[in-house]
Image (tube, rainbow, N blue to C red):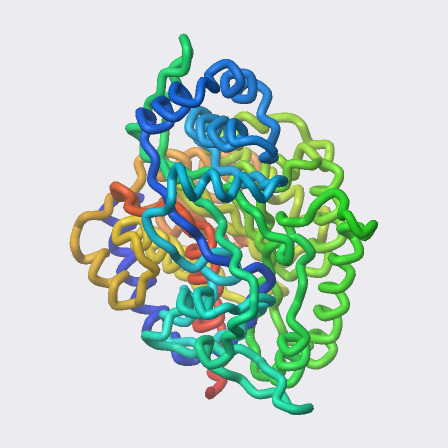
Amino acid sequence: MFAEEWTKKYSQALQEVSQCIGLCRMFITGLNTNIDGLIHVSGKEIENIITEKKLANEVIYKLDNPPREIRTFSDVLAGILYCAKTGDGEEWFIRDPQIIEMIKSIFSYDRLRMGGQCGIMTNVLALMNLRVIPNVVELPPLQAEQFTTEIGEVLIPRFEGKEIVFKKPLEAARHGDKVFIHWIFEFDNQFKARINQEIVEAPVENRFIATYDDENVKLKTDPAFREGTLKVISEVGKVILSGYHMLQTSYSDGSKPEDYIKETLELINSWRERNPELRIHSEIGFLADSALRKSVLDMIAPRMDSIGLNEDELADNLYTLGHKNNLRKIRALDAPQIYKGARKIMERYQLSRIMVHTREFSLSLTKSDYGINPIDELYSIIFGSLFAATLAHTGIFPTIRAAEKTLKSGDLVVSEKGLMEHQKLAELLEDEENYPKQKFLKEGFTETEPSIAFTPSKLTEPKATVGMGDTITSASLAGEEALTRRAKKIPT
């Protein structure tokens, strides 16, 4: 399929989903919500800071031996350079609170924005005029202000006596609650820094995240959130859970990460008992510790209907599970190897759906028991891809109208890499699974078990990179909810 034909499919997907988005039931999002302090950094700026503070040798050593946690200010600088050099996006935890004050004094921030997968996906869904119940453990007014109030309904459960009520974020805010700001260092593909004799250049735009957060690291759920969601779970179509990547290998109080995972599983069991038709999706974020990564996978994935991850997370998890071949190809966005890797994880954990989202393309595998037609799944991931492209193009979380305007502007281009990888995947399916290559190239999906849906991305010169994965995930799941409701012809 050529770029022009994919553009038509993007228009068709937007039309199909937007016409029935009102059929969506309520969404629940969890578990991590915070505030992002966005900082755009240039190579020259980082170079000057390192020179001024005489940290070159220290940073170069850490660039080659990434600590993947922050105990000194040089760790922050090394993290930025490491992500710029590799093109990866990573999140390292701040172990010394004094580092926060150093970041504030040296960088400050360009602007504040909703942060955390839960928070971001809540806003994306609400901007589609949907009802969303997020888990928010700490809700000071500054956090509440980051929730969208333009359209849709963000509902915060609160106790009033023994009764549960649902309030708007600003009405539910508590002045004594903690403020958690995660520092997002964004850089573009023009980033270039010279440290001693080493030159660091960014192959693509990306970001490095420095996080200090003593609540979300324990995956806490607000008591009112637990009670409130159980009260309305029969009205909910999908739950999206994330934040497991924030778990620590150990805690000062002697608790273990598995203790907190079990608490979320108990809530999941309660939801499913009350609503057997519920679909639950989890985004699998970056976890540096291999043993903890495996614990999360082994405990969470079997309880999910669907999981989502990017190419680096796919490679990391495959490595953890003992699959060590072709990981470089996966990180290089080789679609055939991404397909094979995703299928290994799907089969191991008996998932009904798995989605891999990358900068250049996205693909999903769905089994028939997931309950969506292959063409509707394709339209859903295209819809999600368009929303992510709109975020990149405008720098703000999009509405359906903004996505339509961006698509019509002609400022987005179909990824040539995505088109090439679609061709390669089609050839693999024909050679190894006897699925007609031209049929897959023409339609973008297969009628197999599991079915495969593939879309090349729409690209632009990005004004934002943070939240792209969360945007494509939440918008795709909203598309699924809308189109499956339409297919079942169930009235709202």
